[in-house]
Amino acid sequence: MNFKNLGLCLFLIISLPAYAGNNLKKSCGVLINSGGDSFLFYDRSGVKEFETEKKGKRLMSKKYSCACMSYKSESEEYIRGITKIEFVKEKTCLEQKEIGKIYVSEVDSTGQGIPPENIDSDKGNKLYLGYDNAPRLENRFFFYKGDVTTIYTFEKYGSTFAKFGVCSLDGKTMKCRRYYESGIEKGRLSEEINYTYVKGRYVEEGLHALYDQNGDVAFIEVKNRDYKKDKVLFDRYPERTKRSFYFS
Image 1 (cartoon, rainbow, N blue to C red):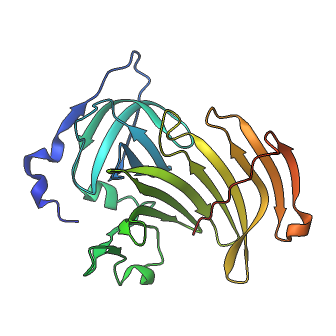
Image 2: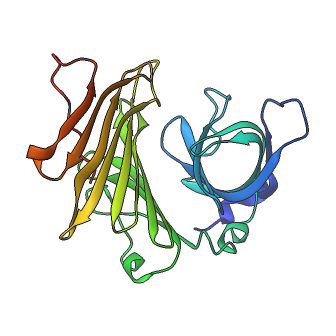
């Protein structure tokens, strides 16, 4: 991406509410605009999500930027306790071999996003930011690192985008998580599905779990590709018709 428009903001420091203590972590990576209230941050250790406490104020209008962040803690999926975000030159990100090259979707004649033509020829680590994907105008972000690809999907919900699902696949198996997209439970885990790669496609196999809005497990079954072998291990609401979600 061209950063000429960044101008004097290259080293803009955005200070967020401070946390006590000096045990802060600092990392530099790609800051990604999801199209909604949350952002993604991709560095050497992987991709994580975070939200700022500056409601009604945009952290950035660009689709992505290179930034260094200071924060108090992180989990497998989230960064919390951010104290500072510093926008830096793009080469700070591109020099990290774990990130690789950054690709952004192009716009076709209908206004929908399509992948750049040269992306498939790049077999190394890379990041692809796919905005306005048809048919549901999803924002889908692909993180390619070694044999593992992680896909974040943000689905259009009202006037903004909400996190719909996260999938991680390695050519043999795929694990997907779906999240609630609205209400007080927005962002909470809704469903977990496991897949295995069979004859050119991923089919459901292994543990399949549904969660209530409060985070409690509501349904667990084991899928074995053959519907006759499916086994329900736990069902809190046996009278309720089970939902089915598909991750492409």
